[in-house]
Structures are given as structure tokens and as C-alpha cells.
Image 1 (spheres, rainbow, N blue to C red):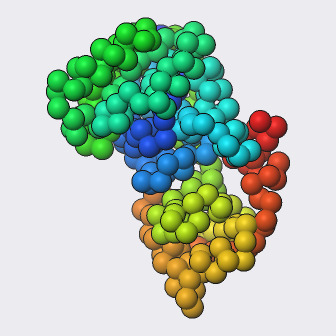
Image 2 (image 1 turned 120 degrees about the vertical axis):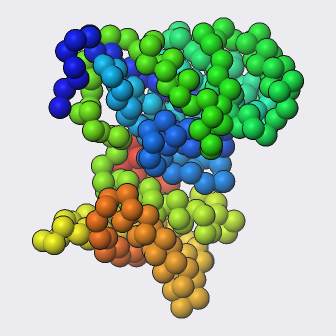
Image 3 (image 1 turned 180 degrees about the vertical axis):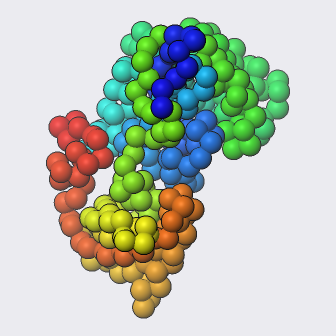
Length: 303
């Protein structure tokens, strides 16, 4: 399906950048109107760029949820941060997402310095405004705008949707002229297999984030459409130690069963069909230094 031909089409890429847990993934899901990016209370769960597509009227907006930008220590950290800044540099518009409750802290200060190297138009999106007094918000907005030249500022709550439509409307009006990159019904550039892996990884993080903060990943080894239209999905949870494998499995396999049940339920809702999900847990000590894993996540292993 193509856009109406009465007006020239617009297509803009908008990078959502911010510190970990600023609410970028929640905002992306609110913009698209459905879940395309995993959301947990654990920082840095977005590892690669996730694109959500919003097509309205003659405009198509491609919002890019980048990994949270923080002080990197490991190879995976460095690759995630590099991916975030690459996403910002490649976009038509860069939106800085700031947690209103945390305010202008050291992480945001570092981001503001990085934005000096970005030539594209920049907008400020102050999120979680429902948690802060109006006078505090006004001061935060002034302080941030004094440091960086933002085109405009939005006060939103990605969680309840307040202000999100205004942000979308501005992006629509300011998206450059150009051909659409995706079909009108497209919501994300993630494949079904990658989406399924992200769903399971979210449930994994929600269950065991205290015991295994980042030493686990999920890969979809097989994604098959059955004759009856249902999906058979085989996934592997990779951990770095035998002790971590025991934690993921749980007593008598109860933890992995619970993770699988939660993931399966969400996949069935997302895919609108029956899902047969099979999870396996394997130890791979060096998965976080495996170039192939980085390619699958769209990250640069050399960073």
C-alpha cells in the first residue's frame, strides 16, 4: 500500500537518545501504539537499535530507540554506546529524553556534551512529568535549553501518554520530504524471530535481574510456521557460568518454566496466533565477546 498522492510524502528518522531508564523504550511503544521494545526497570536492557514505524497521513516517522548512553566499561557496553551515538548521527531529528525526576545529573551533562557534535535538529523531551512539580519542570527546561540549542521542548509522560501526540505532530510537520521506507502497516523493522527473542529476554530480566544482571542473552534458533498457522519457536538462553544456568533453570526447572509461560502468553497476544515455545539453557562463557552475537544484535564488535 502506498501513501496518498495528493501531497508529497515525508519520511523522517528520529533518534531517541538518553541516559539508561530515561523512558525511551516506553516512549517508543507509546508512539507506535503497541509494544515493539522491551521495557524493564533494569537499566541498559535495550542493547541494539530498535525502530518503531508510525505512518500518519502523508508522513512516515521511523523512531529509533537507541541503547541508553552511559560510561562504558565492557566491550558490550562500548558497542551499545557506539550504537546509540551512531543512531543519533544518522537520524534526521534527535530527541533527547530526560527523566524529569532525575533532572540534570552527571549522565545528562555528558549527553549534552555529546550533542554538541550532532548537527541535526535537536528537540528536548522531558519525560515522567507527572512525578515532578511544575516549577521544577520549568527550571529543568530552562537549564537544559541554556546548555544546548533545542528546536522545541515537550513535557510528556510516556507511561500514560500525556504529551506524546504533540511530539508526534511536531515530528510529522518537520520530517523531510522523501519516499517511505516501510509499508504503511509496518510497525517495526524487527523480524518475528528477533521480536520473540526480545520478549523472552524481557521476561528473563524481570525474573532474575538481581542474580544475573547482564550475563545472559536469548537467541531464537528456529521459528517455524506450522500447518495450522501456529508458531513453533525454539530459543536458547545463553549464560556465562554453570551457577547462572542453575539460577535460570530454578528448582526442578520452575524458573525457566515461569519465564517460558510469561513469554509465550505475550507472544500469542503480539502475534495473534498460538505459540509453541521451547526454551533451552546453555553455558557459553564468552558469548559477550563473540563477534557473531554482536552482528545478530546489530552492534559493532570492534568497539
